[in-house]
Length: 68
Image 1 (spheres, helix red, strand yellow):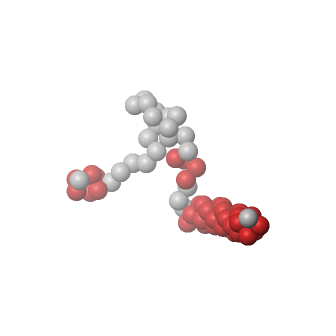
Image 2 (cartoon, rainbow, N blue to C red):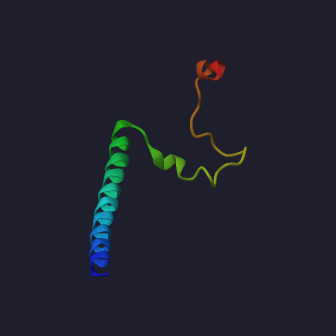
Image 3 (cartoon, rainbow, N blue to C red):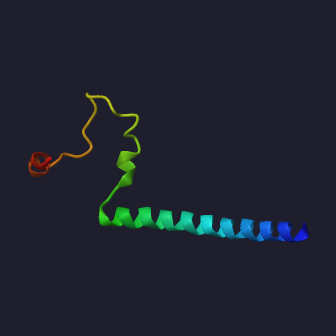
C-alpha cells in the first residue's frame, strides 16, 4: 500500500508541473499572438454582444463570401 501512495505522489507532482508549464505556454502564445496582430480580447465579449444591432467585429472580404 505504501508503493501506491508513493506513485500517487509522483503522479500528482508530475501532473502539477505539466499543467503549470501548459498554462505558461498558453499565456506566452496569447502574448505573441497579440504582437503579431491577432487580438483575442475582442472576441471575449462575443457571447454578450450577439444582438443584430451590435457592432460587427470583423468585416469579411467579398471574395471569401462568394466562395462559400
